[in-house]
Image 1 (cartoon, rainbow, N blue to C red):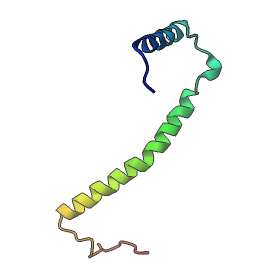
Image 2 (image 1 turned 135 degrees about the vertical axis):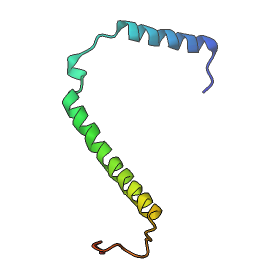
Image 3 (image 1 turned 45 degrees about the horizontal axis):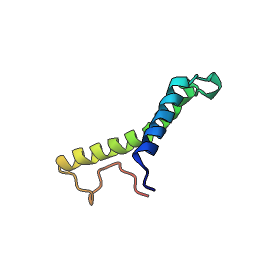
Length: 76
């Protein structure tokens, strides 16, 4: 919905006042240890996927074929 310049400026003034008047409330804060654990848990699958891709690239550079499994590979 289009807004006038005056409406945009009023909104900006309202936001500025909210920032100026903000008082942190400890009850609304997150536990930093829990946040760090969540972040690490979320990062792990991404790291694992990157490691698999790096290993595949290294295997291809080494001349390994995906149609010819290496000794010791388990196939399901």
